[in-house]
Length: 413
Ligand code: RNT
Ligand code: ZN
Image 1: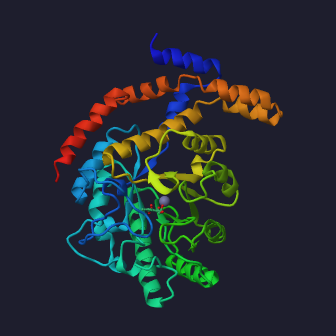
Image 2: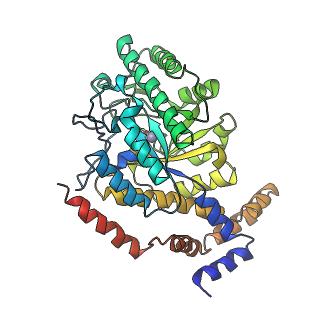
Image 3: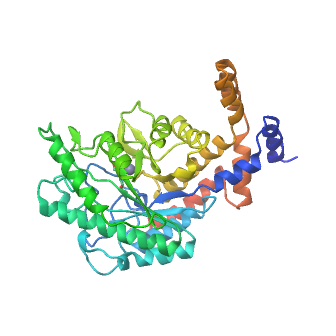
């Protein structure tokens, strides 16, 4: 009897079908964020750091400097991840010799990414880049008091929707377009209302053109605060929650964008009652929105359990959002995606029906016993099995696979 056969029997004894769990987990696409590969630098023909209160720290060798290098790194990373996934592209990762400003980008500047995605069997998601630009130096974009600057960013947002819709059409899968703006105020503002009204009006202009949901899903991302905008974020959770409900967009919940004791897992069922679609930015905040690589920790397990137990996967898009430049960037992707998958697999391997029945019967003792005893089930044997079927390394084998590529990437200079 193999380790997996024995695990399968043990789960079956709990009424859990490991084959069904494997299939269910593998059916969930994860949108892999391109920006972990180059420390949120982008490929516009100028240098600059992320800005907008977000920051990758570290100087690990091997950062991707060109679209070709980034694609090579992504191919390597996807090659170590089970299942078929998506790429989440930011607008300043255009691939062209031209130098269009943000308000002049067109589909053709991204066509090489689409060709590559087709070739790789990946879906594409897209994001306007409302930071790292001279028109965002004040940490104000769509809510800027200056109409000229607002119009510049509205045009950027509109073009991103057109580009994303075309990507969705080309790839036969709706492109999730997430709008995050850094807008806020370092010190205490006196007219929050004016800023929020301007943001709302600008967003309305961005979303004005009706485009088919089969091509794109519009999303808006809230945030509590950022470096340099400590006193107020214009696009707070309440702002976007209301906006998304009234306007019918998706709401993006980033795990780093709330007070540290708040749980995004808890929010899911609450917002799901009012929203058609949810986007997740799976991240790991440490003391602030630090965007550490996600671990297989309680936060991630709780998130996955909610997605599965509340049957929210059909209306949720899972994207990752972290950037650590102190470690191998390809390893960061592989570890982060695999952890998200492991968390989902574990959720599918839990005795959901029995747990819910105990809770409905107010038998909180049984719920506690089952929850704690289920932690000793052999989840790892199921994960190892699905990796083995895909010829993917686990454990110490993963270490050598990741190190081998990293030493090549380090030679980039
Ligand atoms: C910033 C937001 C946003 C960005 C990316 C690069 O706090 O989380 O999602 O990280 O768009
Ligand atoms: Zn985010």
